[in-house]
Length: 117
Image (tube, rainbow, N blue to C red; front, side):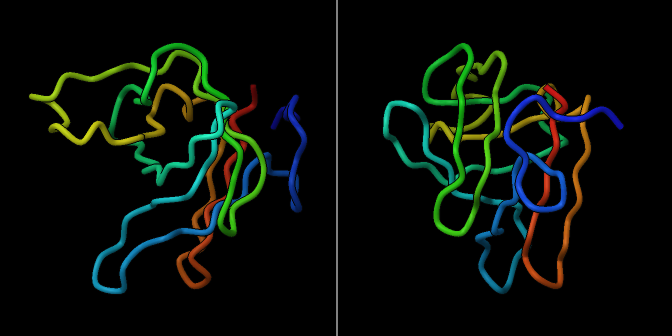
């Protein structure tokens, strides 16, 4: 496995997320903050092809609310409402995960990601 070019968190991963999900459903939601100061609950979803954010292009997202480290959306999209609804959810998709690795610790509601960017 290649080493990450961003600051790693404990265990060599570049991002350690605290999964924020209700007890009755399992969603891989983590809290992040962008460089503009906005804070968002973001879904990590390998089944969604493209990452989606509030604005297009490259976005650097820092962990908050129990999450730490850095995630990068290389080319975030603004997906159409007919595909994602009117709420414009924030989603880290397959295109920003496929070159790295991800470990899900369901017992501790933790998500470790290394994008290898």
